[in-house]
Length: 268
Length: 257
Image (spheres, rainbow over the protein chains, first blue to last red):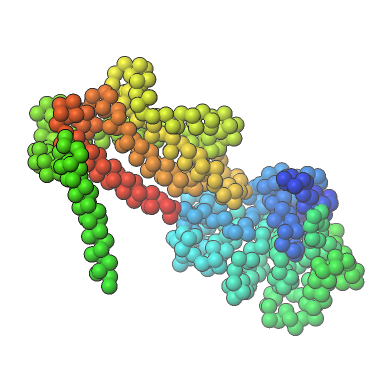
């Protein structure tokens, strides 16, 4: 059974110019341990989709379940890395991560919580900056704090909302590699939203294109049959890469399926 | 180059003071013969300035002692304003119905002069000291209320979402997210409130005749010692300036937080 299931999910917003139907009839299955990426144009409702899975907003129709249980509000079982990181500006790196560790493990002792926080900060290579505030950090460092905080929730599912979109190209490449490394070691189930096709292919097991809104919905899932660990340089040489890339770009451009390139949705 | 800038930064305010003293002198020599000149003001007031803490009676004390009495009164009124205004601002910022219910009322109460509140305070409390505090607090409270409410309302949704995802308890949400996020706004409110509290002190002391800079000012007017009025005015201005600077420093300290 899939860890995360979305069935026929729709969401609209009331705007001064009438009802804006963002998502319509959206289905998604994500298996345990899988890294799924959702690729779409800006403004196609990607952040709305993340907010729905996170439980920060409720769908107008449809059903979202995590491990069989209906999602009816936000919770640390769906750790989230916000698009703009949303680090608390008045707290140090340590305090930001500690807040999450503390929130999810009330039974642990203070020393254990501190040790766990330090371990997470080490994992994202920020030990030297642990006592700095977000304002003193570069964009890449803030992003790492956000990832550490997301992992600190020890979530069943980690949601990444365009995690690298605010970074310069070099930093982005470094952090993508780090995220891949962390994912390999932690084996969390991840749903990553992005507008970068390459990034999705580099990291994900399966990629869903999100059609352009309004009434956006997911196109057929595309399996990425390239073994981990992947490197952005080796990727170009892999025969599967061009295939996946073409399938995705074709779909996003034409929103028509070229069925041969897609694999069946996971039903296990 | 740098040195010249420093000299100008130091000299120009002195030029400003000099010009005002000149204008004051001209006024006192020409159109307003009852207005003591700067020099007469100094010679008649220096006893109060050079021995700032003497006390010959309730209404005959050094200007430092009067200022201290006024400062204590302002501190009490200001503390009252902050103690009432901050929670009120929080509730206004957090609850839409509460805001809808009370915002119009606040907008009506806000522009009322201390001169109007004081008699009401005297009626309620029957004694001048609590009436003065009541007036100071009531007039000074609004910037704290309004800025706190605005600060709470303008907390970025993302910060609140962090708290929601972590399922923080209400008290933790308040302590870890809402208060720190609103703190810069609150300090702006405190600063404006203190400014008003000091502004109101003179009016309230004048009307209650309480010992303090304002009370002294009014008494000396009635005794026709006009130079002491000027001494009081200058003292009020200097202390107000110092208070604002101090609050400005506190404000900046919390701005980065």
